[in-house]
Image (cartoon, rainbow, N blue to C red; front, top):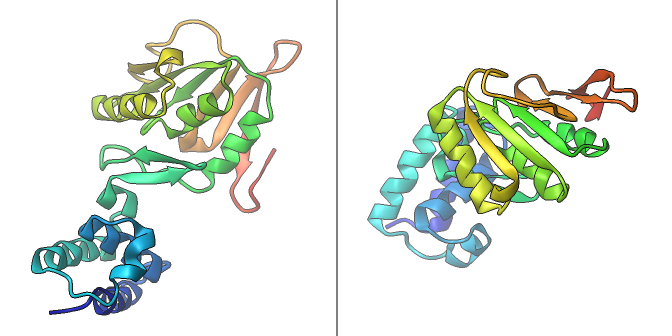
Length: 210
């Protein structure tokens, strides 16, 4: 039998050898998922032997992470801007720099927001959760992505203010929007006081926007 601590040490070494960034963190999170315990409790179970089924599940997760499958896809969720979102292989993993786009967008005055290529819906849901008077539409070509976004909309209780539509960019969209966001290009556009559309892009290098 192997203890949880020994399994984590071996997993960390395996991920480090594969060139995975922050291998200790990933080894810890994946063990918590395999053992179905909160990550904060890992230190409590570290001295204990892990059951064979947990060890097999953990080994499988580590093998997938070693070939760069995102942790969020392996555990089915990802934290973004202080909230946890359901994630699957059907959507892109939210990038950390996308939070810079959220900050930039929230600095603007908007009531209607359009999220193109919404994916998991994390960007749209976050903007509406932070701006309780706003409403929004999320669009994605993928039916699976629309279902994932809808699940996160319901999870964070903004369904009364959101429409998720399947289609190609602007095709299924009607009306005017104060703010249009697209994580794929890390950019957004908004209308200034004179009604002129302007575009801003998040700069990933320094977490600023222009």
